Image (cartoon, rainbow over all chains, first blue to last red; front, side, top):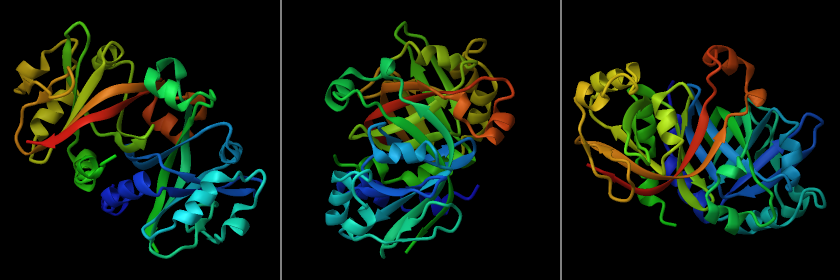
Length: 168
Length: 168
């Protein structure tokens, strides 16, 4: 496996994730599309494949889409997209067309059905969902449980096999 | 969160993981210690913290230790440790003292109870276990299931908060 391309910008990707965040875009099997802001993701190797893992709570509109989807994309913006990221992290796709209202366009991905966000100076991961597991709340650090799950909305982990990865 | 140190060598780490592999070392609460070879790991951010996730099958001796441990360490060797890694990936800690037989020494970690492997030219991650979840086999890609789980030994995911990370 040639991981060079998948992992070459990993430090930059993590820095962006932990500061402004990234776009998670999903198109489900019925054609519904949504984008949400994420600040959490894991990148690496599992099942001998390059994997990007995202975690989504059941309360999110994106959750319903992911549960009925084959894939997702993650777009890491290297320039300032603070306004768009805050918008996508504040409003729900159940009430608002975030692409229209948030000023974001999508374009076709190369290998998956979910689109990518059409911005320059960004890194895109196209991911095929290969595994989903619910967070086991009985075996969660107590401080995380208390601080981050007062709403009892425990994440599901979505493991995506990176089918393509490139920059625009 | 300053992620620079945690993720600065990520591309190099992934390359080593996907080629020769790395050492996963665990000391449980009773003092039992073991080391195993891993080729799979995910690195990134979850719960607002830097996280390293490893996956271990119930058939492994290390599994029993992890289930009764507070932490683990991962040592990424940047020089050739092929012989030691093959040894640690072939023999079980239930039958063999892999440190003694495999020619590996450990030294105290800085922040966790599990030791690190005492080698030069390596990167060490000290991880406190903050979440464990079983792989949901009902939601696993069919090809992975067929190819990698003929023994039905489905992995448990161990999410470690990176408490320290440095090179020797």
